[in-house]
Amino acid sequence: MLVDVVIDGIDVPEDGTQPVDRVGALLQLVAVGDQAAFARVYDLMSPRVFGLILRVLVDRAQSEEVLQDVFLEVWQSASRFAPNRGQGRAWVLTIAHRRAVDRVRSSQASTDRDVRAGFRDLDVAHDGVSEQAELRIEGERVAHALSALPEAQQEALILAYYGGYSQSEIAALVGAPLGTVKTRMRDGLSRLRVEMGVTA
Image 1 (spheres, helix red, strand yellow):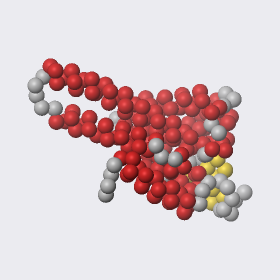
Image 2: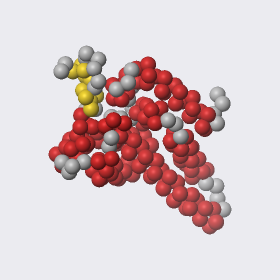
Image 3: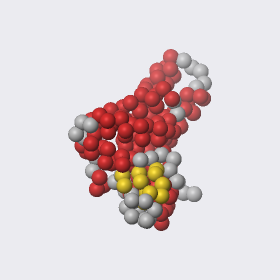
Image 4: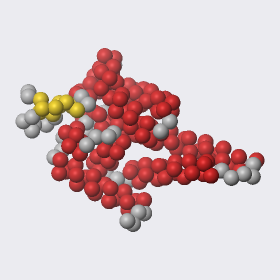
């Protein structure tokens, strides 16, 4: 098979046929306990997964912890990967996004408790803390709104905005025409605005 380009472990044939999902094939081996396949998935995906997590959390130390959690979940739940429902890398990135959002929510709850305790004990301005809390709440609103979108739109937006993929790369990754990906992203962003109550 002639291969035009390889994107994060996916062979994109130059003849326009369906891309070969290397990560998906490796996940099927991981599901039966193949440690070498797991190591290969880690090598292929960890830079992109870490980048996604870091974009959500910003904090490098927390991002490294979540990266470990993500790959532990990949190892433990690879049998749940369904090749007929999407590409392997999208499945891994979705786990990463969910784990990062969970960490934001957990951190937000902890921060909220600390802020309430601090306000009870001190009568000083907390502009920095307030601003940080507002940013985290806004991030949680985006994550919640994103989860309300149809799966295809959600996948395209996660790959673009958290995974850093271009529209043409997403088309290759999900095995869909570029026009379809553009439509999914346009419709997804439109629905996201509605979900978040943005009028402009």
